[in-house]
Image (cartoon, rainbow over all chains, first blue to last red; front, side, top):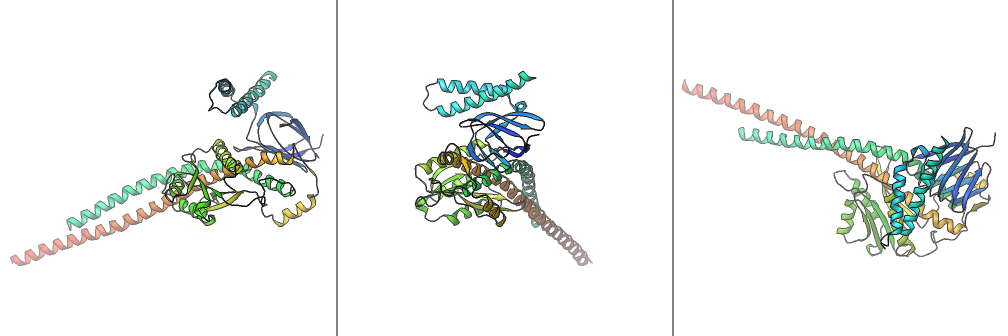
Length: 138
Length: 292
């Protein structure tokens, strides 16, 4: 068995994950990065994307959006704005959010914050992707 | 006597209806307090982790220069984010928060206030402070979005150098019956005092090399707003719980006082009634005597 480290994931709503893990893959602002035990100390911001946790029981997937990861000796802390397990994702809401974001992006209204709409779009697409992936696996 | 007795009765009635109101308010705030505490328990790990992590990162990165660090510039204008309630009838909760902020404020001219909650807004508005932002009616249903919005406003002002330091005034929730108004400095960042044990741990690890991706300054540009947002969020959640706690206690006291008052008034009423009866008997006896 691979060496494990302590992984802690917190969101403003709750403590999302707290336990031992063999590996964690996160989408950082520079792309997907995997962290295993004894990784060098690192601090890096996160983007919106898939989060994979590998522990004794297997691989768990979740969505993760924004925040940062702080890796140090035998421990990794992920502070994120939101994290959800696939079964918690509300697909209808995500699709709705995607459509709303699409509409906002297309409209020429100067009041609409393009950056924000783009981010919202990413978040919705990410949720839909993770959810669909899980359903296909079943 | 009839007049006096009726008067007392009327007072008992009015005190009693006040008691019913305060009792109802007490029950409402207990229910709200329970909800607010659940929230607080859920968000506490986040709040604590962010605070701890950022402090650790700061402690390990002393040689990085950033506009967010202390000593980089002169402090001319301070911004205070003051969290108060939207409504009164919660004992000293609002006054304590306002007092705590006044303690750290120096010159009215160099202060800008971001008021959260109606009471604080009214207070600072009436006294002619500069209000840079006001948020009301967000405390009952706090969402991270609100905190983000406030955080974005603060960061914008800070970057434009409209403000040089930022304080957050909130009420920390120590227990159901004890709350304390606190004023903490958000920006520029200062290292928070460490306890002996932590220092020792740090001593061993301080030479460890840390990789900051993509670059230290870019990282701080990203982390600091996050830090400010989460502290504001934590402050909001704690203040909301404290507010309900304070209101519950205030209403409990009011109900107790009303009960006590009713007891006293009932005693007085009975005494007056007894006196009237005695007087009447005396009059009858006197009348009978006179007829003999």
